Image (cartoon, rainbow, N blue to C red; front, side, top):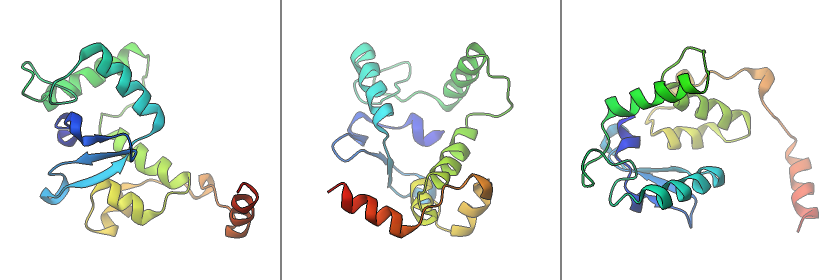
Length: 149
């Protein structure tokens, strides 16, 4: 959560569909993916609120939103949406990793997106049901890509 509230406008790299995470896990910078849908909503958010430095500013434009405020906002939105399932804001990170793997993103790429130095951490972090994995033969993917060219 501390990484999200510190995102600056310049960290949104829409041309590369990436978000720069500054001073993340292990005090390192890294990049994670930016979905097209998320970018669409970020543009609407920007047009409405016009943040100056931080994507999610705090009380003052030159400060970031606090982690505590972000968590309270998450729980309010969850309640308003009628979501009764247990889980905090950190569950979104788990969900991202699980769904990325389920849709074919490699474990090493997920490890980089999450900022883990150890693959073991990523493997413990992700709760993946083998039955849900979408596996395709590389031959089918190759033929499909060749036919679309």
